[in-house]
Length: 115
Image (tube, rainbow, N blue to C red; front, side, top):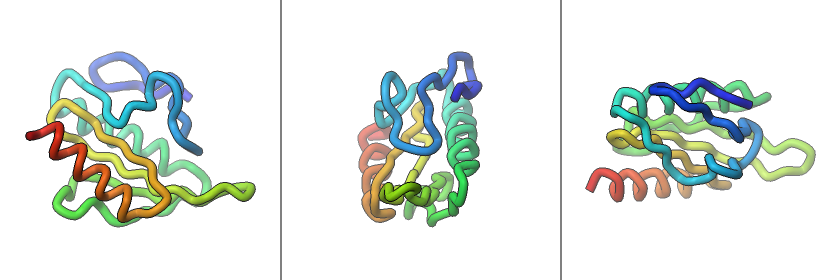
């Protein structure tokens, strides 16, 4: 699946139904401006939300602009929680089996990226 990325580029290799692989597998993505990072969070989260049976989950505590989703397992796969947030020019994404773990990963990455 390809998605339009604010500020140019694409998200080639993005898979809304499972973990990311290839060039988009890093835990964050750099954009040109903080506004672009926020838009990219929205684009990714909207794409993930279109996964069949996706459910909204609570945002990361202290980061109200974050967005988390529960993606149920299919065909015996384990359900995963996806959380996305913006930190300056960066988009943070995590995928974890437990929502609490995804929240902790986003919070840690946010702290590292914003100092």
